[in-house]
Image (cartoon, rainbow, N blue to C red):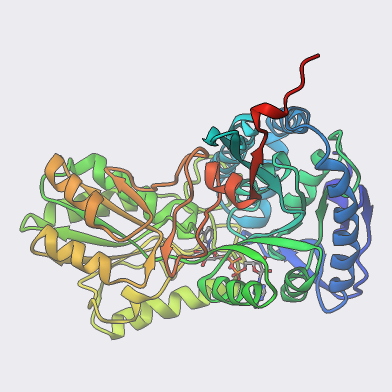
Length: 497
Ligand code: NAD
């Protein structure tokens, strides 16, 4: 992998080769800790031409790949797992340098990526069909799963390595080809991952990397070879992708934004809860689709949990994610930092009080970084902007409610449904919450209810458009189409030899 770090203008990987984009327009990729330009990524209208080359190559590779038995297809995933394991360190450094999260957080997302590769290795079992012998006299009926063809995967900036693995290994294991379009804000990690993919024994063109932004996404959706689109990003774009895929007759799964509530009951274990909740709100500087954003304290003992949360939050060390002892990195861009600081101001104007203000936080030697300290707002009015808007930054909005029923009602009134969590030592309350909360990922005494690779990443409401999610069996289903065969072989046709 030597040389990749010096690469200035990022290349596409099409038909098994590194190729320059057809576009002459490039955007800077900036390290959010110091604004240093670490690469240039192709963008603009001409990236659509790159997409066309990639889909053509992918279609040819697909025709070859689908004929290869699934047991042989998954061998490339075993190899990919080994390569990911042995390149974790340099991948983690690249993730931190382009995305801002701490190195431990980068290693954490790589682990989740690897686990998805492991689960997809089970495709020989996971994609098996059903058969009923003698559904009628002399008649058998079976359902088999077949691949779709060329698939596309469009990812956001905040998990530059993990998210593509919610889809890609399953698409390949089930016999499809794939084109990956990473975020233009964090495209370097994908370049490194493709240096590993380049070492796999697979047909040329089976897995392709195309850079770009809206133009390459539109070209993918409109391309006749592309049969299915997996998208993860903000809700407005997810909704657009879903509608466009519908218009162009594509199978689609589009995961969107979030606004995740956490309810704390008076019987929750104080210190543990405070630590877990703080990790959920401020991990990855709040730039996780499963970051807790609204904390609802139930009952009268409001101050003790507030004090524990405050103490836990204050202990965070903000800085450059590769430096020792840093527990929170910068946000992705100056625009993002401005948006978050303005939202805090809006919250204050709308009646919230600021318990901890991270807006002016400075990190010595990193004066150009997009750093924010942790912020806690309390008594945020529940019908106002801060409660409804995805902040995607290190900001906790604290509110109080009298009963668990009131808190669940509040959770269910939100537009999003990515995650909802409850902290309690009561099994009955946990059960009530699990049953009634309207979100697809539920945590009971868990702060980031991220499904393991075996389970679907189950967003609901404005957090997901489609029906089959990423990961596990849902992904296997998404990347295959079912075929039902009914066969009549009457006994009296059998000849004696
Ligand atoms: P984004 O929506 O801006 O970008 C995501 C992808 O869409 C990128 O590849 C980008 O190039 C492309 N894109 C952007 N604008 C487009 C347009 N107008 N038309 C077509 N394509 C377009 O998201 P982001 O800022 O990179 O990521 C953060 C968002 O992603 C947050 O809202 C977060 O909650 C969400 N997210 C959701 C999940 C989940 O599982 N639900 C996981 C991670 C992130």
